[in-house]
Length: 335
Image (tube, rainbow, N blue to C red; front, side):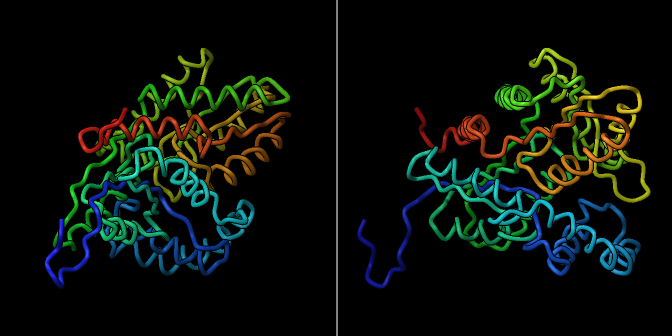
């Protein structure tokens, strides 16, 4: 089609797939961590307290004490190419770059920190994406993860005069493709260990118990994932919840307490993995792989293994490709 003289250039119509994950500081230093925590803990989806009550605590106490400790934790797992979460999400996007044909752009963004969801969403629109699939990489739905990532995308869409058509990736906690990928990954990791675990723990990120009572399906999704994976593996899987914060009652049992109790009760060999995370991050590599090991061994355990997330493993990329392809049906024609 020939454009009239003086007409601005129009990019060829495209489709976008935006992978979205939680977020990370720009560096493992106190200043970067403080900025990141300030954004993260100010999200009303994350801390469901009135701002007038919460912000003085956040600004007066937490952001003056927690960043130093968190920065030290980040420094223990930081990679040459950045934070693990950002690095693996970037690799996942790269692994999917050519998966859907030349007319589909695959990009990635973080709910907190950079690259920001609004920036990457706008870049997709500017590149000609008239239809965009928002893909929060959280297998189990939670308002504090899935919903807030979508919220941020929708907030930017509200500023656009010409909005692209939008779809969102549903939770895939019980999808056979996801369970199958987890099974393969767990079995591969266990086969490579120098010991046979007596117990396998599935550690999910914790949430305040109040969220369950208010109707958040997260706890149920986690339990179903573990139940289906247990059936697929043909061996018991014990569920626990990590990363408690603050005085509220949280979903349990607590991962750190369970590791100690298991060791004291005579369990000597444990493998633990985190099926609620699509990519390894601070909570898996520092909280589980480092501090979890220390707690278990100090309580009498002898063999401890952290099994990695799907990350950019071949089974994980194939799983994402197939799940995303299903959500793109009707927009693109796939073989």
